[in-house]
Length: 382
Image 1 (cartoon, helix red, strand yellow):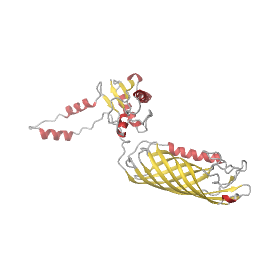
Image 2 (tube, rainbow, N blue to C red):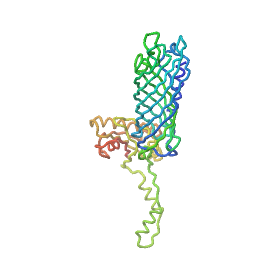
Image 3 (cartoon, rainbow, N blue to C red):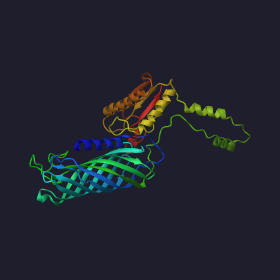
Image 4 (cartoon, one colour):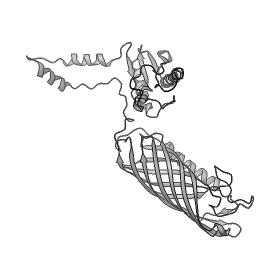
């Protein structure tokens, strides 16, 4: 029964964390950094107690409040204070064992797709817990017990307003003590039946459902900026006013000729380089960030609509590491982009992938921002 319950909880959480949809401006802009306050309910459940020791969950419930600081779009630190109430029957006496727990957790969170209306995350951290047990068959297990625990969490934040989000989270908590569940393991003479991280220590799981309020937001993030390709909006009124201002005599404005000139310079020419703004890579990685995918789809559409263009895909790195290693890494990055374009319909014969390592930096490698921009992809039109 316990395995079926855990499978159900895990399935629900994976559904919550796995569903994402396209970017939307309906709920406001994504900040680079932020502060948020959270609160909600908790369903806790023992996971390391043998089924032949405790059965018949009577009443499990809890609640929490939290404060969270997001230092970037992807990384945040959270302080969470929780209250948990767990009950169970002890065999063979059928005595009711109750456990009231107060927990303070400090967790690091990583958001996989912060720009999305449904943003999944993973986290880990440590906690300090005080459990107060009554009804334990072991006399010195009753009363208060102070201990620490290790945490693993998986969850999602669901945008429902400009500053509000629903939070769903599944947590696994491994307690350092073997007294957390308040019972003996009759088969081995130890306390409990073993957690994930150590042989005999106790563990429990939590499922959170609550709300987050973002009460402070930093500057607008650049993750949502999509490269718009070669489309240029022409402001004819401004052009006309400029011509009239500097003209000494009446002038007839040829709008068709102006538009032809604009189209001429917004088209691709042989030998030109197209810098894919927003297609960047993490340090020492050749994997695409989620924010890069819409930009590459846009580039794919442009190449498919211009079948006469052949492209050399140029991969670049920052100057961290040796020149030889950086050249190899930049080649891997260029290959990843080529594979993406081929998978989305661009003919392989039109594409060449070349790694240029740390050459031709576009910004100063002495700053973190400069290094991030130098880990880039460019298209050279051939």
